[in-house]
Image (cartoon, rainbow, N blue to C red; front, side):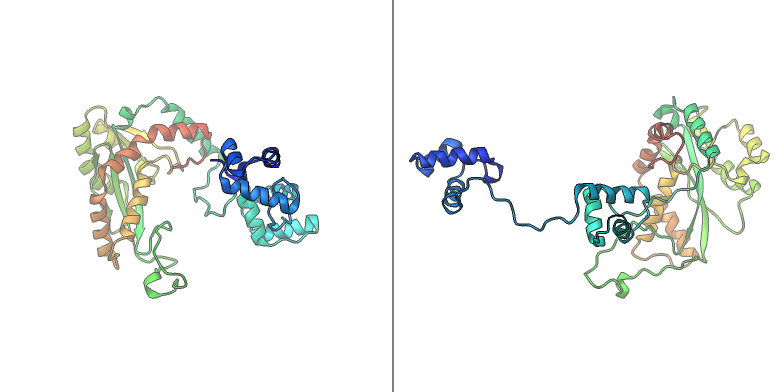
Amino acid sequence: MSSRHHIDDFMHGRIIGKIEEGRKITDVAREFDIAHSVVSRLWKSFKTTGMCSRRHGGGRVRNTTPSEVRYIVLSAKRNRRTTAQQVANQFLAASGKQISRKTVARRLRGGGLYARRPVVCVPLTRQHRTACLQWCREHHNWTEQDWACVLFSDKSRFSLSSDCRRQLIWRESGTAYRPENVQEKDRYPTCSIMVWAGIMINGRTRLHVVANGTMTSQRYIDEVLLPHVRLFRGAVGDKFVFMVDNAACHRTLAVQDCLDSEGIQRLVWPARSPDLNPIENVWDDLGRQVAGRNYPPTNKNTLIRALTAEWDKLPQHLLDNVVQSMVRRVECCITLHGGHIPY
């Protein structure tokens, strides 16, 4: 049956007219397929007020007009980092009308704007965007089968205080500063380690810890290329491609000569494009798994053991999914003309 809220004034008039003709409320309700109680309340309201139109609600009148709401939304869009109080001050200076920051927040939510943390990305110049766009256009025709032959490698640094800001906790209201709800974190971490790894479809390298010093080109050849790349080169065959990032030690002639002598095809990566590299998503997940352990690492040795254990426990389908997303990443980068992509 229809509800009174969906009955217009014309229908109200017809219902009242039927009852005035002497029809019973039950018969009128059955004829118009309306609940008996709705017709009864409508008839009582007509006898009391003499009106058959629906009475409007008695809510509080808005203190901003539609044009003023558009001004508020436009002010926030012009400067995305402005606060609700600053928008209210701008509105006061422009119109002479004072509104609260809560009113501004409600109007912005009504316009589809919400307060969220900004996405943090590396700065890109025009040269970076151009190089990234050209690289994606060159690999636009690559299929998932082509990307499945690529070993995506990269290094990352983890510290004892590293954690994911997206990790939430369950707590009661007003208990934010209880010891069990506080996570202590140094602003400038003193203990950190560098690790290296590679991923591809149906496989991954072991997590290599770069200990005692920096990663030079010779160390990279001895500790990374020869032990790991040879293994995957033999498993995949002639179609194997090794992704070389832009670290200084990777661009040396010694590394290039080593890859050429092994007959390994190189895939040179564009500069400042971490969102294109699927292993970056794996590093993010690895950091969250380490931070979410029941007993987080407290020193360098326990951090190494935690990273190694969580790396081995990462499900293979997670690695396969991020590698298979390369087709979409390339297409998205081309659509955005070499800019930041949502990956």
